Length: 162
Image (cartoon, rainbow, N blue to C red):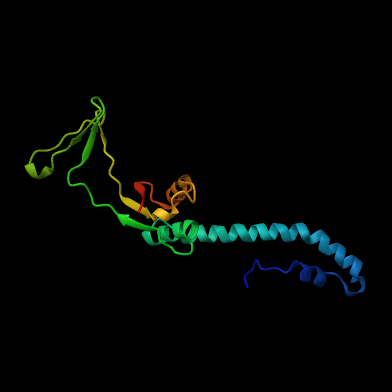
């Protein structure tokens, strides 16, 4: 039992003096307490949701648990995989609209990049693997929003269906 578990009917009964405890008065008090009970119920729901959000973070095990709780609660088939890093970075040359492979630093020469001319390619940090049987059962935007809520800000991801 926590501090928030209050039986409002019992509390009203305890606060009314014995001489005034009649069924009509008590029923009237119970009706007056119904908005309080409704507000307490909304507060309990909000507290449970906040506790759930605070207990889960961007770690792989927690992110996988959140995704499975929301989208595949019975079979829990959604997984998260690391993506192998690209051996040499892929760069996009904006002026030519082409992709280039930058040299590795093993050649001994420094690679100098002009930030205005290049942008980093399409590399990702992790991959969310969703079973193909779940495709179309939920809006993919909901999954994107849920992942963005819990992932670290610098991490990039893709969703694939297998």
